[in-house]
Length: 232
Image 1 (cartoon, rainbow, N blue to C red):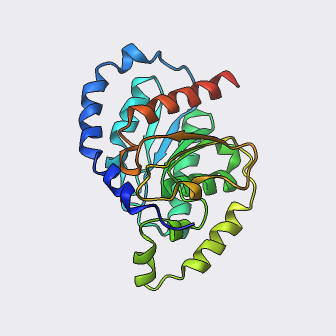
Image 2: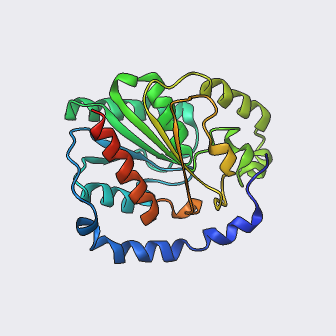
């Protein structure tokens, strides 16, 4: 497996159109989606180099369908997971206690890896995890950032082994994964959960950078969360 095809970069150029469509579709959200009734709060975690601004449209949609939604409030995701985890875990616990219910975690790209690790460390505070375009296999090895990591002195082989070690620790909460063969950032095969048989997968057509503004993604999240509620 290698980084995604260079041809997929052209799909990523559609981001401005995806953003424009959000504004057009927003007026129809209440019409197209019945409100979801659940006391489980939702926390959205952004990808590498991004912050809460990148998930604003996604969080707006989730609020529109009746959910209690929170940003991660950690600034820009710098990718140093060891530094991020203590603060974000404390944030999740605070949200869980405030709502008196475990939290639904939605992680975009690297945010998905972080979400899964949170669920391993504090499963009692996590209801379920959804990963969108997250490199579960190899970390940055099978992404367009591989060469950048190498140039900064990172050992991709060691990073891949470390991630594989963590991913081999089973998840005890439901996990749903969205992946795209049009992803220009993460190779789609690296998004597949090879470790947890209970994980569900959904192929989407949305490229990586548009996942936070995609109507297709919003619809899939709606169906997934609706299923979680029905299973309570």
